[in-house]
Image 1 (cartoon, one colour):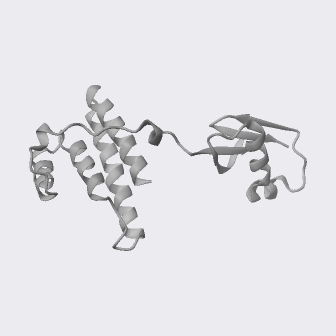
Image 2 (cartoon, rainbow, N blue to C red; image 1 turned 90 degrees about the vertical axis):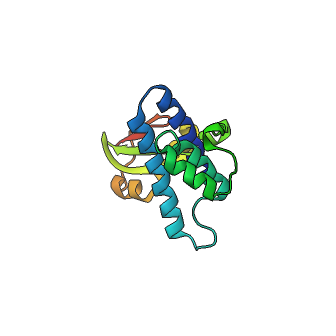
Image 3 (cartoon, helix red, strand yellow; image 1 turned 60 degrees about the horizontal axis):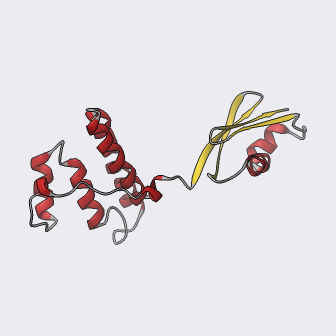
Length: 160
């Protein structure tokens, strides 16, 4: 999860710098820090948080905004050359694609629950998963849906 997040952050921060949208670039870096903190807190001390390679990539992303601080961390990580001469982190396009998407499930136009489905799922599979969800079964209370509308990647609307 952190690996995917770092690749997305590398892409987004690079694009934000080009657009001079520094506030959103910094917000993206904060998201990475928060995710790494959660991973460290939830995992045991031996396997939580960022790996050294991930930390090096993060420091490269941080450098345009906090150059002196990033340079100090860079050398503490054992990197001999100057951070300013280091290449921008490369982005693996395969890691930018979501494996799952979250869909809103509506009953008569009102959002009642959310459902995580594989991003490759077709409308029929999404419909089947939505109808099998315990909250949907409870809300339908034995009624047969008249119509089910699936908007790929966004929502499922069940009209009962």
